[in-house]
Amino acid sequence: MTTVTKNEPSRRNFLKKSAVLGLGLSAAPMSTGAAHEGEKNNTGRGKLNEQSKKLIKLFGLKYPIFQAAPGGEELAVAIANAGAMGAVSLSWSSPEGAFDVVTRMNAATKGNFYANYVLHFDPVSLDAALEAGCPTVQFSWGLPSEAMVSKIRNAGARLGIQVSSKQGAQKALNLNPDFLIAQGLEAGGHIQATSPLVHAMQEVLELAGDVPVIASGGISTGHDIRDAIDAGASAAILGTRFMATRESNGHAVYKNALVGAGDNATTYTNCFNRDWDATHRVLRNDTFLNWEAEGCPTKGKKPGEDDIVATHPQMGATARYSIMYPVKGHEGTLEDLAMYAGQGAKNIMDLPSAGDLIKRLWSEFENG
Ligand SMILES: Cc1cc2nc3c(=O)[nH]c(=O)nc-3n(C[C@H](O)[C@H](O)[C@H](O)COP(=O)(O)O)c2cc1C
Image (cartoon, rainbow, N blue to C red; front, top):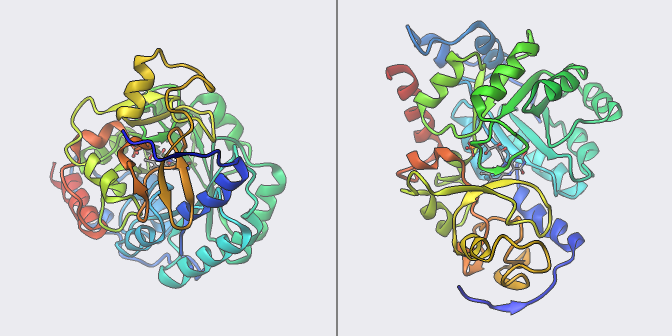
């Protein structure tokens, strides 16, 4: 491991810099007339349920496949234009940045994308995103206030909320969302879930009624998507699998680490908590293993805590335990940064284009 220098990036600087991670792209009205490949080609097991058909129609999709928040604009456009649902992370964007991202996304797609906000951070760019015509807004790690929901509804946008339990589902359903996401502990990145996906899904489905539930966590193949849909989900969200594509904004070091990561590659931890103390799943790298070897010490006592292990032309210095993952343009000992990965990483063997990956996922879904 290389320690480059010591520096103390402030939280505000971190937030400013992280906006670069959320680079996204557009605001044409949502297309609802796309051919539904998923619906058309299905027979037997893996057949789409009625809820799933309704969901893909609602969002103008060919496939019941959603990108999770990360990956950047280029990936979101590629996924949306391949007939799935793209996503941009706007949690750390300035209002101007979010306006531009949404404007570009609307121009480059048919509006089949959503903006994600992690509600542990103030969604300062929500108004700007809606003003730019953001078609769908999705929240995780909290519930939007009634004022936020009114703004979204007044702008004619759709609303999604991530939950992971019966209690969470009940509170979210009181806000009349268009869809819920049920996240399981298998997920990569930050994990609000406290039980495996199958349990989270069961609890959420029990209450959801007509509201579509999208399964999230550890899904990386078409077989996984089929299992989720057979279990009652209307669609599946893939985070880690889409990070390992040509278009994602992940640095090559991170993408290559995902390929062939193996069965026991990830860990559920709060190790990378410099900027946000929350549980997450990452690849077990040297930063994690050295911290674990010292007994998982708390903030202030962590080994190499102030090391700056990477720098980025726009984001500047990134400290060892930062929540930032290695993105294109980073330089340094990138394998020491948080490399988020869900348990489905065990199935990642290549770095295809997003379009090729979606075709492959669908063929696996259909053909077993
Ligand atoms: C690199 C990375 C970054 C993530 N960033 C966010 C985020 O900004 N907001 C959020 O709600 N979830 C975030 N997540 C979690 C995803 O939304 C989703 O729950 C997870 O990727 C699903 O599990 P999977 O990675 O096994 O597919 C992130 C996940 C990864 C892998």
